[in-house]
Length: 551
View 1 (tube, rainbow, N blue to C red):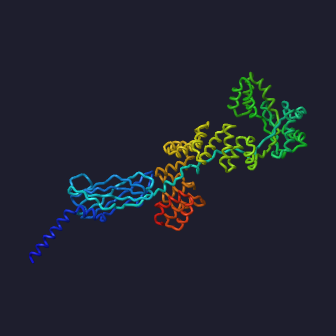
View 2 (view 1 turned 60 degrees about the vertical axis):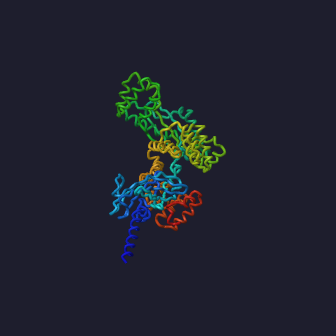
View 3 (view 1 turned 135 degrees about the vertical axis):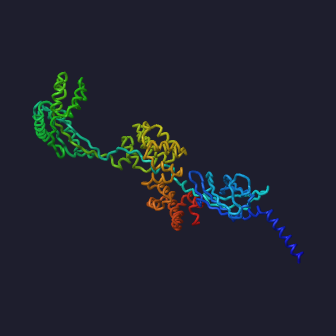
């Protein structure tokens, strides 16, 4: 019996010795005892980086006092793997400078990992590879320890084309153009009598003939006539005011006489009194030697009596005024207002196709907006560039070139612009740079463009991981990037609201993400099916971690 007991003790001793020799191996085999948490739980790519915080919990009695553990984070993805910087831990009886794990109590240690994004990582796993060093031997953990799934690349859906926020430079085309036909009669000094010679003047004859021509012009319509009477600013103010009023009456009678057979519309009359504005204009346009002195006097005094006195005191110039300026101000003007109906939209599009040379700059710019075909738009802009060296046409041609993904042509049009300082110019230059991947250059242009470039500057915010800034810039927008910015900030209510009314395939993909995040998997599936009409979206959806729960 004693012998049997002794044999049992000997056998137990052998087992204990074997266990002692193989504790490090057991440590590797018991890897499941290590608890690892990752923040975020699903890896996310931000600005081309995958960053995460890992919390590693070693339980009590797990870590050998004289062992050293090396842990290497690795991202496994289709087509390869990316190995991160290893972390090393040591037991409490190891004389080294690594992070210590107490054998009796265990420890929880937090680490940060960072990887450069590589295409293919959108379907990946973050794992830990570990090995123990103990008494000169190496014990490799039998399997990778999974830490997290990855990686979310939703921000890469940002639309960098800029086409959502590249407004065309506006034309100044007028559907109705106000015009006037005008003539005047002159009076003798201190007289309100209309002379026959004035009514028979070439000015009056041309005026009447112009009114007759209007009657047969389908595009021009008389809207009314104004008769305005004046007095020259010499002599007493009260006398001149009365003289102007009397001329108003006599001019009306004369006008009625000469327009008996033409339509002048409703006629109104006004008396101005002393014509200081006309006086200033005539002096400014004259060759009078001291005209600058006269104009300074006009600006110095508001009292017409003082003005008149001071000008008369300039005896060297008063004679010239009396002979050249004042007689022209003793007058009454006949001003007939006309509305000219410009080309209609239908006429513009027809002329663009069949007689483009008939269109002026503004008509060319307007006609380009009326056709859907980009080549037809470019034809209009090219004609405006050739005929008028139009900066607006150059800019608009650059925009259309970007719509057609002809970036080099867009750059050529922009380079030929005369004014390279405008906000719209800087915005589109920023888009060209952003499309080429020159984001720093793009940011510089967007800064010069100010709020005009807000929507495109938000694209750079998204690419740089500044999602809150992007959402702020796109607060009042409702396009692709406005919805995406809300998704990236996990503001799903705003994202859903902004996506309403948009039915394109890209927006269907965004709606699928919104629904998946809200747990509405049926809607997500239907939107994925719609978006999958685009091959790129279909392939992306197959590996998109946003849809991991509905596959």
